[in-house]
Image (cartoon, rainbow, N blue to C red):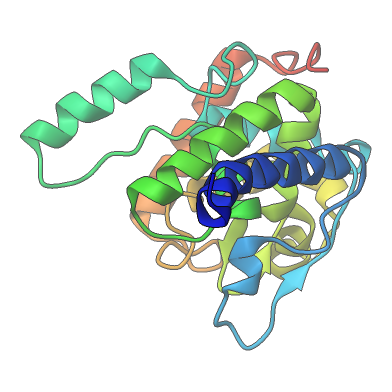
Length: 221
């Protein structure tokens, strides 16, 4: 076996081991940054980690209501949503995504933006690792801390301070819904200058929060 062939066989195993170590470490250690933060071209990046018990329950519920209502149940992928997105995208020019909170956490934390088979394959791999090695609560905790809510604003604590001059622990249901309403495109949708679309989406999110119930995430571990 030539040296080049040996490295072709060993390199994927080394990367897989590195990825497992990354995910295991971040199960207990707060991320200092994320791939998306490092790639940001904003003049200033605002990011402040807060643990789960310092995030208002409404913020967690709003994110799940807006982005991934099956989050407590699935293993990283919502195949029903994927089928619907494929069907929609075949009939419409407006592309609809179907990424779960677990997939978005994997992408935002470890990967780069863009569309390619390599990046998508890595996203699948990291999503499976996160689901296997982290409790669901940790997945949502990390997601809320690294999600982008505006230019240079990452995480629910930085967003709460920037937009409402209060800590994330004191967010109201309406404020949490407004934050969740901009998650699909935080560079275009504004929390501080909400369009009619953002206001309407925030109202729908509040309705979904009401339907899910305040105890929907109570058993999340």
